Image 1: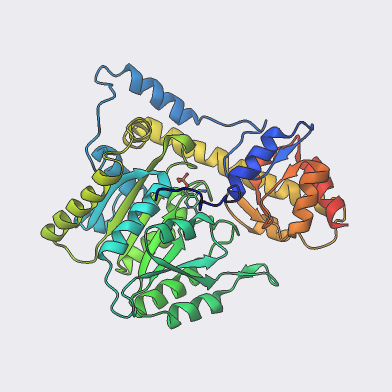
Image 2 (image 1 turned 180 degrees about the vertical axis):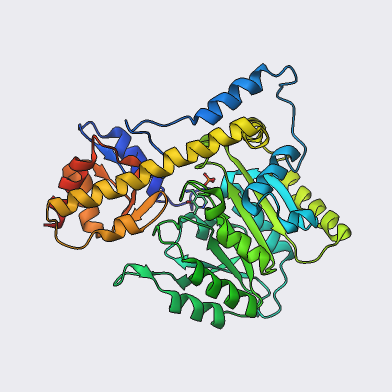
Length: 410
Ligand code: PMP
């Protein structure tokens, strides 16, 4: 008989739940270091000047309308987006080994990738035939549920060494070597979430080499390109190296952070093949299109049109690259400001990891109890794991945050 009574209540999503508590908090001052969204030096959301200009041009264009996009998205956007991650002179693009489709931002890209791999990725080394995706420990929490809901198995590889506050490279490589051949490894292209720790070029070479030797498949999650170092090229180094090494791979690309287009859901999936075959390209694309058609019919148009304008217009493109520098520079400055305040306060412990980490987040190494006290006593909000979104800091609140951290640590 029909009944819904067996449905149990789930706890609030850790991140969006935190945000709701912050919004409901009547205290002043209060500081949100939770959700990973850029804030300007007054703590306000920032519409990138390049985006503002692109939006103006877009609505002025006489051909502007709200028609459906093709199933695989706006081609002028997806093709330009492929060049952003793979490089203007990418040999893989020239040889037509890259297949690109539009997705609902990075999350939607990971979802399509998961569905696609579940359906088509053959790994005869797995006893039940279901591929395992290896993700870093820790990783962005959503990775687990995205892949599990696509029907894939998940496992972890060591990444953060809590004693050294460095990457556990040995543990990582050992897991790559021990995993069944042909496993799937999820790699954060840059700005590792939540640790803010990226492998050096030398470490990347070791990681990619081990992946190659073991015949694994690389699934790159690229959610922070250009946002991390300020350079699109530097932040794509690992992906481009993997392509150069002829690793079979798939890229999930988000424009949420680097264009500040969070709510517009702009992203892509790019599959980079190692062999040139027009027939295979057409077959894969047809299957991807069926997945897209059955799930979202066709992707949202507005954000893709805005980002496409930026990528395809040289003036806007150079404004965007400047905007990336504005964001990344401010975040790096705030890392130093927080570290320096803590040092000035003589807060026990070493805080250099805050300036050594990269991207949106710092893995502060504050305990769950300290994080709880920060919220309850000081109205400073960060995720229970001790991850702080550095973008939430500014000149006006960094001292207040440092004093709060000092109080909970002492
Ligand atoms: N991957 C990682 C590692 C992320 O941090 C995020 C955003 N927090 C995403 C993917 C996806 O974000 P979105 O769906 O907003 O593009």
